[in-house]
Amino acid sequence: MAEPDIKPSRGPKPAYSREKIAELAIRIADADGLEAASIRRIAAKLGSGAASLYRYVANKQELFDLMADSVLGEDRMPRSSSDWRAALRKVARLYRAMYLRHPWMLTVSGFRMLNGTNLLRWYEFTLCAIDGHDLDIDEMIVLSNTLFAYVRGHAASEIGEREASIRSGMSRVDWMVKHAGSVASIVESGQFPYFNRIVKDAATPHREAMEEAGFREGLECLLDGFAGRLARGHQ
Image 1 (cartoon, helix red, strand yellow):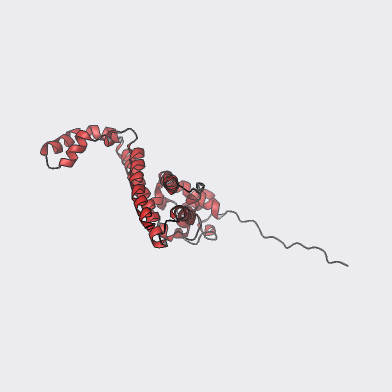
Image 2: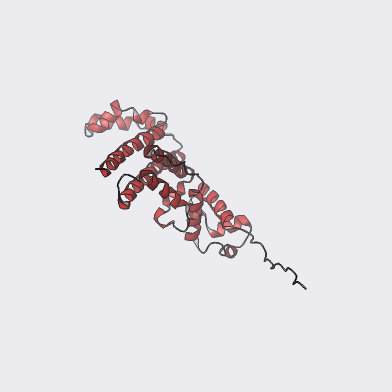
């Protein structure tokens, strides 16, 4: 007589998941900053005790790593392209948008986020885009890191200006108008000739979409430099 097909018993389903915890923590951090996303606060939002969440995340650093990996997985990588410049342009725009959505990501160390794979997708994409130009892997890393550093720095400036506007209640244009007298005094002093040229001749500070234009033009300057380096790799 055949033995009955006995299925193994299953334990109770987990009350939460790492994905759900990360999702809630990200919402908290987006609203109130990274440090606000504590295990205790997340547990309170879930109607649970903090101790129960330690089954899913061992400590705050692991939670932050989980959040960062989740954020870096929000965007689908562009299709691979033989046009390295177009590929890097696309990935830079996506990376900037990620920081603007989640400003707290500026305080997360990318070097330490290797417990998840989403950061690696970004690096794989950029390294693949510049491969085939007779550069060794160290040279390729320099270019990739330089691209990400540019994006991070520009995003940090944009976020800083956004937060200053919130704190002061004044937009950038309002602030410029209020301090017009101080600017005039600096110009009249003659101590800073290049600043005087900016005030008198530069269009950039008065653009409606100064941040967007600045990012785009700065990125093209950076890619011009990359082009020279990639060309030398073939020599």
